[in-house]
Image (tube, rainbow, N blue to C red; front, side, top):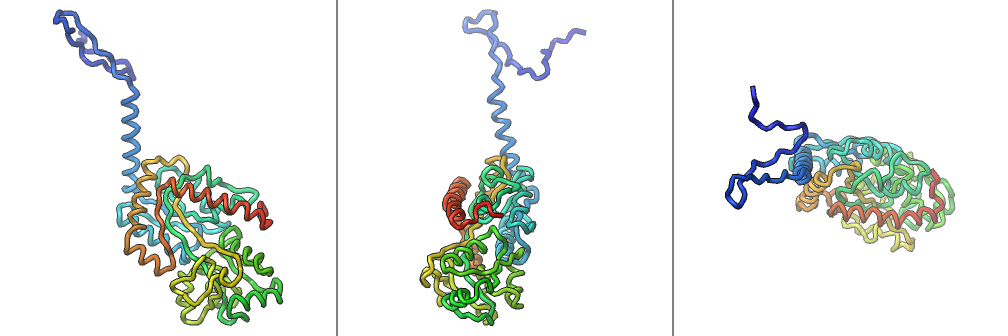
Length: 351
């Protein structure tokens, strides 16, 4: 039986039907086949858009490099709740340890589909590069920036029965008792250690570093007199400060905090030290730009919401928005600032 249809080769591009020529005779002019590249381009665009939409249909994991219950974890859970309300089903996954490197490496090795995000900070996206001789990930090659999310002013907090009541007495006591003050941090490569190291250098004192896996554990250590001081946020400490169970000594930010107007900054006290903790979202390298942009749009909606800004302020947080490109430039700028400083402190590749 003769087949009068057109036989197609596998993968071939079909020609459109032949048409009569302009002369109107019976000779036929064959229309040229369509080039495959425009069709391929449209297909790739469709795939990217579908992938961006599929982020809404699946559960996104927001990986936090600290234990549950601390200031960063509380903020992350508020972000996850707001993301879920806006159609991006999100859960928080805690992976503490190694100055955030366990969590960062986990996300860096995850599938670049927008379903695994890392709540990074100046510690694990900037400081670790200069501090550690070996790292399991490269923050500038293994991640793509998604969004800035905010910063957290930090203060110097002491146990209530410490033998010093203000920053001047703290410095005097530390000078008279080298190494006797035990200071807690959430990791060697974090601002809670580096900021205190800067204070030690500026004041000409020596203290003993005691690392923990989260500030919730540190608060308990302060309350039970296991450590003397901690450079931390007001998220959990403020109620304890107001009740007299903890004692604030100084503010590391450039200005006093609204919640603690009587506590001076370090610069006011004659010590040239300023530091804060900032945070942002990154995704595994290779995550499609359409997905990154969609998540950034959701984060901008959340961080611009008056109710979320107010709720964050009650916890001591200052929200911050921005495009992925702006956050990427910010991180690079922080690295350019801190890398020589860490070197000058004699801490480069020391861990």
